[in-house]
Image 1 (cartoon, one colour):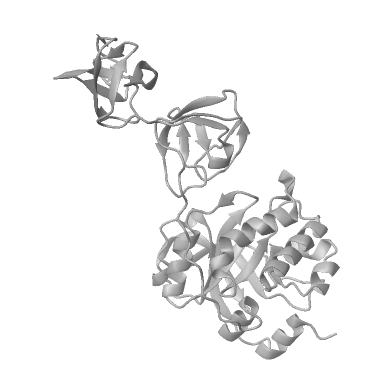
Image 2: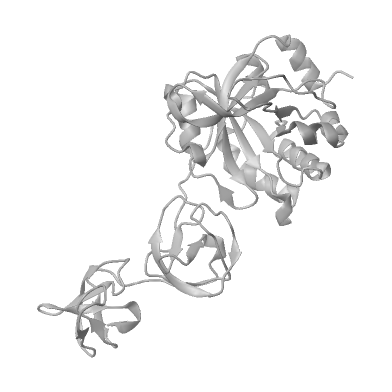
Length: 357
């Protein structure tokens, strides 16, 4: 049977090779423009809901310096997500790069679940018209049955490090595919222009072959503008929730012992941009159940219904209640964030000590 993969292999002759890297937020600050490489493969998504905060920046740099691009999704079948749901999430974030980038499933969790992997690859193909490839280490590639994936013409990117010295060792064996498209040969690579270690990869083909994987029918694509991530809430809003993340990137979703709190910091563009109670945890928009939004701004007329403090950190004498005034300053991270003044400063107050008039 003549397949898409075998046609590509015949086209490239199995001789040409490109050099590149694959990166995620852990390489923040990398200057892709300065790197002498042919391609960059960038993490875009994970599971359902997580977006790498740096992927658009990385892809913009790569395209501006005429490097080939790829985009990968880190699968999380262990969380109970369906392959269809994760494929939908991936495509929603990769849509502006479809038919410009090679699409990749990063397969590192529950690696024996080959049906899940096949269903993801098939779903992405049906949504985009582009056959993604699958990344995995040599052990699962050679020890589980990948017949459905191979017969579906989904290519392989294999990881095998040998001694992992930063230099390529012996190319790995490959049991199921006629050949592998990419080889990640080290996780401790060094490249001029970047001080840290990074994954290094070979692509077995020409730049024209790369374009064929990314855009098999040669269709011209005009990308839609990517809207910025929007923070729906602000500092001072009181919200309820059942779960929190350990950081603003959406890592480590945990059940919370408390179920309400105040947003004390917002980092726009992060998946979980809201810090709760100065350190309890981080929330994403979808984890917020209810919210009492903060409508106090500088210039808002208020009545103090509880006592405040002479200092924003609460270290001074109490400030009076029952007084009408105007909010003249706000310190979002302070214990008493709102300065209320009449003809002169009256004191600092917490939100529940103020009533709008």
